[in-house]
Amino acid sequence: MSDDRPMLEWALGYARRGLRVFPLYEIIYGVCTCGNPECGSPGKHPVEDLAPHGVNDATTDETRIREWWTRRPDSNIAVAGGDVADFFDIDPRHGGDESLAELEREHGKLPATVIVWTGGGGRHFYFKVNGTPLRSRTAVRPGIDVKGRGGYVVAPPSNHKDGRRYEFAPDSANEFACPPEWLVELVNGKNGAGKKERFDTAKALRAFRTANATRCSSSSRASSGTRISRSKTRSRWYWKRARTATRLDHG
Image (cartoon, rainbow, N blue to C red; front, side, top):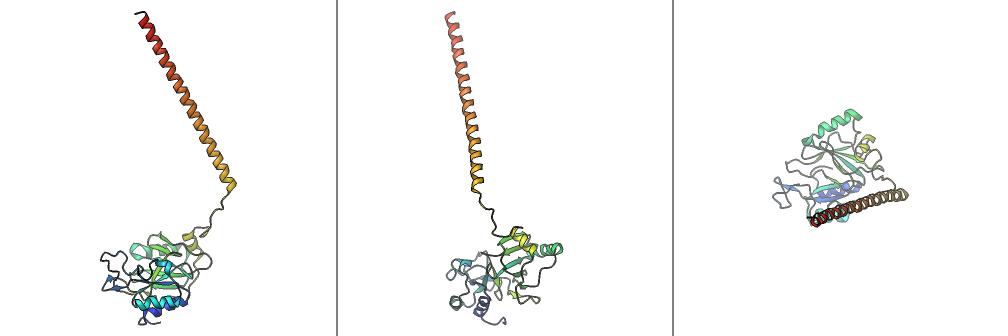
C-alpha cells in the first residue's frame, strides 16, 4: 500500500487486519482542523461529529468506515488497542529512547514486530494480543507509554503538526509479535492484568467484628472515663462549696 492512496483505503486495510479504527482531526499548515487555536492535541483527537465517544466508537465495520472517510476524506486514522494489538509508545522527547535501551540491556532486545515512526520522531511497537492484553499506562518508564484496551495510537499515513507523516519503519516486520514476558510483567505486574484477589466473605466478616469490638471497647473506656471525670468534678465542687459554707458560718 503506497502513501498516495486515499486515507479511506488505509483505514479499511487496518480494519481487515482486525484493528478497530476511528477518525481524528487532520493537520493543515501545521494547525489542527478542530478549529481550536489553542488545541492541546493537534491531529490526535477524535472528530467530534463522527466519533463523539472517541475510542469507544472504534470499529472494523466497513460501512461505517466508508461513511466516516467519505465525509472527511483527509481525516487522520486512529487505531484502537486491546483487540488484535497493543502498542508500546516510545517518546524520545521525554527520554523514551534511553529508557528502552536500558530495558533491552536488562532483558534483551524486543522481538521483531510491526514498528511505526511517529510524526514527532518517536516509535510505536505493535504487539499481538495473545490472551493477556496490556493495560493502558503512562510513563511505565520515562518516555514510554503503553496503549492497550481503552487506548489508541495515530496510524500511518496520518500527518503531524511538525509537517511529517507517520510511516512504517524500514525494519518493521509484517506481522505482530507477541510481547516478551518481561514487558507483560512490567506493564501488568507479575500476576498479569485483570487478576484480582478473590473476595473472602468470612475473612471480611471476622475483620468487621474485630474492628467493631475494638471500637465498642474504646467507646466503653472513653464513656467510663468520662463518667469518672464528671464524678470527680462534682465531688470537688461539693467539698469546695462545703468548705465555703463552713467559713461563712464561723465568720
